Amino acid sequence: MKEKFAVGIDVGGTTTKFGIVNKSGEILEQARIPSNEHEYVGDFIDHLHSMLSPMIDNVGGIKNMVGIGMGAPNANFYSGTIEHAPNLRWKGIIPVARLMKEKFGIVTSITNDSNAAAMGEMMYGACKGNKHFITITLGTGVGSGIIIDGKIVLGHDGFAGELGHTIIRPGGRLHKTTGLRGSLEAYASATGVRDTAIELLTKYPEQPSLLRDYSINELTSETVYNCAMQGDTVANEIFEFTGQILGESLANFIMFSSPSAIVLFGGLTKAGNLLLNPTRRHMEANLLPIFKDKVKLIFSQLKESDAAILGASALVWE
Image 1 (cartoon, one colour):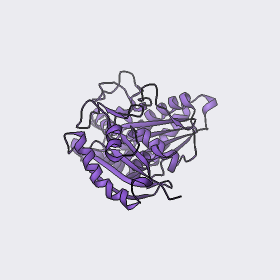
Image 2 (cartoon, rainbow, N blue to C red):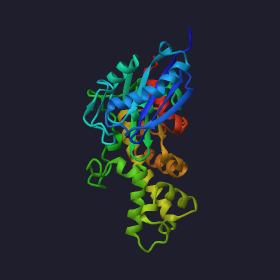
Image 3 (cartoon, helix red, strand yellow):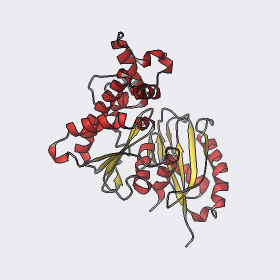
Image 4 (cartoon, rainbow, N blue to C red):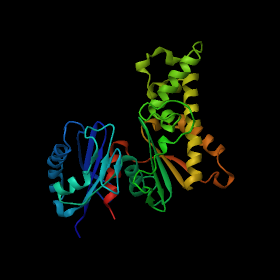
C-alpha cells in the first residue's frame, strides 16, 4: 500500500496555516496565507487550492489523500460550517466543509480550533493513546477541548466545551468581547494577565515594581514574565493570582469529566513553573479526596508552530 497523507488547515483570525501531514505526524510541506484578505469565502478557498494543489501533487496526487481537516473559530463539526465567527471577514453561517469538498474533491472535516488541538494531542502529542484528558489553550483567549472515552465532546449542537467562558468569579472582571463577567478567559489568558497587572499597579500605587517602567501599551504577559524572572514582587503576585484562578477552574473541570491528564498549551505556558506551580497547588486544594493526586498537569509536547496543522489533520485519520 502506498503511504497516505492528510491536509491540515488552521484558520486563524489573522493567518491561515496549512500543510501535508503523514500518519506519523510529520509535516512534509507547509505554508500560510492571510485569513481576511478575501471578501468572499469562495475566493479564499480558491487561494487555498492554488497553494495546496502543488503540495498534493508532490505526494502523488489526490488519490493519496485521506482527506482535509480544518480547525477554525466557531466551526461546527456536525454541519461543517463556520458560524458567526467574530474575527473572520465572512459573516453568517458559511458551509466551509461542503465548499472545500466541491473544490478539492475529497472529504473535509472541520471543528473549532481548540477541539482540533485536543485531537492533535491524542494522535501525536503528550496524550497519545490517552482516552480521557482535557486540553486548555492559554493564548490571547482560553480555548479547550475535552476528550472522554477517546472521543471529542461536541454536545448536541457541536459547540460543547467552551471552558474558557465558564464563570469562575461571578460578577467579576468584564470580558469585553462576550459581555460576560468573571469568565476564566478574562483572567487566565495573556490578555487577562495584562489586565491583572494594570489592576494591581493601580490598586497599590506606592508599591515599587519593575512593571512601572513600562507604559500601559508596553505591558504584556511577556513583560510580566520578564519582570517576575528578575524577582519583581508584583509580577510574581500576578502569576500567583492567575494560577489560583486557573487551578480553581481546572478542579471544577476534573470533577466534571475525571480526566487522567490536563494539557496546557499556548503562549502563556512559556512562563513555565511561574504558572504551573500555583495552578497545580490551587487545583489540588479544591478537589475532593477521590480526585486528588490522580490528574497529571502537563505542558503540550507539540511544537507550537506545527500544532494547529497537526491537530486539524488528525480529524480525518481513521
